[in-house]
Structures are given as structure tokens and as C-alpha cells.
Length: 180
Image 1: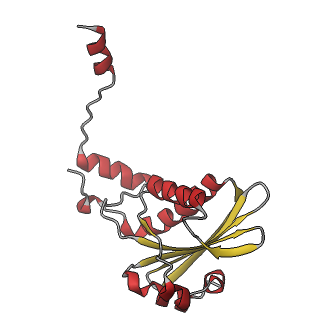
Image 2 (image 1 turned 135 degrees about the horizontal axis):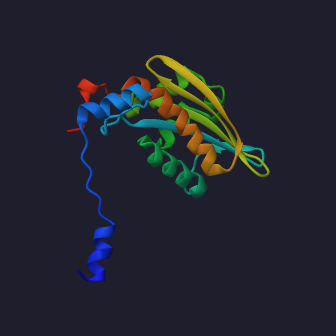
């Protein structure tokens, strides 16, 4: 066998699983198995930098937007950002998000037909980012904060909070499994 062929074979791995056993192990370990078809989560995000607060503007905050999308992808959370058109700017304000006013947030979100809404405040400090979050789901609001860390870690931790909360509702049980 040629060296090239040996190299190709060294990178291949064929794995097969017993569905029932795998689901039993996952369920008993407390790990959530989420279906790949996940509903989108609408994200209202206020960013505070140098004492100024504004909604996430992807043109002005490309680094933040990329970090959010990367964290969402890593956690398997499909995020939807609001359009922030004139209609939305009249329907909701930065203060509504910061005060976590559920009525205003839900009203402004109604055009998106989503079951889950995440609102947050991301604050740039001298050497780190901190954040506060509110997850609106199933007529309840779950709140948490993420202490000062680098941007990537902060957003990963924030979306871990979303994942942990929603996995309780969306996790598949063995009999619901999509694993063939």
C-alpha cells in the first residue's frame, strides 16, 4: 500500500452506535439531546460602550455580531436578529430592553412569530465584557448575568444559559429519538 493511501486511511473512522444504549447513556448522564429542527430565538441586544447604549448594529459592531453568531453556532442555537426598521424603532427602545419590560418586548417581537425571545445588555468595560440576560419562553422569564470576561467567553457563557434552560423543554427522550 502506498504512503498516500496509508495517510488517507489513518484519518477515517467508522463508528456505529446502538440507538437504545446510546440514548440510555445520554439520558442517565443528564445530557440533553436536542432535535436538529430547532425554533429560532429572537435576540434583542443592547450594547454599552464608552457610556453610550444602543441596539446591536451589525454594521458598527461586526466583531460582536460575529462572536454572537459563533457562540450560537457552537451551542446549536438558531438566532434571529430584529430588523430594527422604523416600525421596530417606534415599537421598542433601549430603555425597554434594559428595564426588561416583557410587554414591550413581546409586542415588538410579535411580527417574528417566535416562541422564544432573548434580550440582553452587553457592556464593554476596560479589559472585559459583562452581560445581563432575560429569556422569555413559555410565559416565564429566566434571568442571569455573565461576569466580566473576554467577548467570546462572555457570549458563549450567555448562550450556554439559553441552551441549559431550553434543553429541559426540547430534549428528546429515548422514544422520541431521531437517531436511527
